[in-house]
Length: 166
Image 1 (cartoon, rainbow, N blue to C red):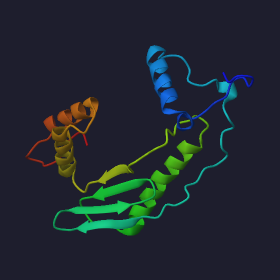
Image 2 (cartoon, one colour):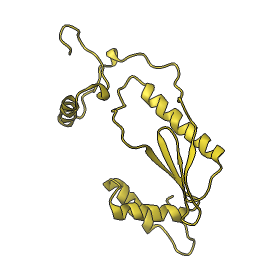
Image 3 (spheres, rainbow, N blue to C red):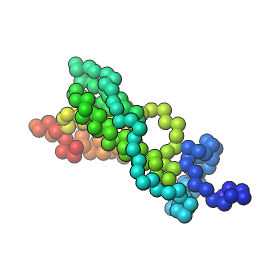
Image 4 (cartoon, rainbow, N blue to C red):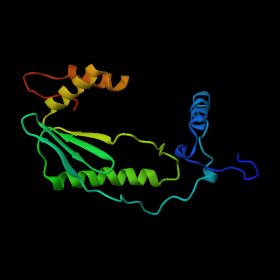
């Protein structure tokens, strides 16, 4: 409630860090309570489109099997060289999804993003297995993702060279 103004819906990015901390603590204490009054939500957008879907090849290392492409909100890494038009089309899907989520009147955008969203493309399931093992060893995955990676690693058979769960 705002003094003399009633209720208002504000995105988390519009709140001070102290208010964001208050909301997080309130949410932990009230996990089933609604975060917003549905009667106070803004209008749903009729359409949303990304401002830019272009990508550029940032890094190319055929010997190291590392090809990195960069778009407005996403950085994409592949173990093989991909045609720039294909990467542009995929980035278009990612950017359109991002634009649609940000256009919704739900305050989903917290703001202050310092890094682009990471996307990995792999030619073979074996590379997925190596990446998951690498991430698990570095402990960069949340606990559930580490468990998923461990389950995928257990289902890998050297005789066929692929992960069944991928």
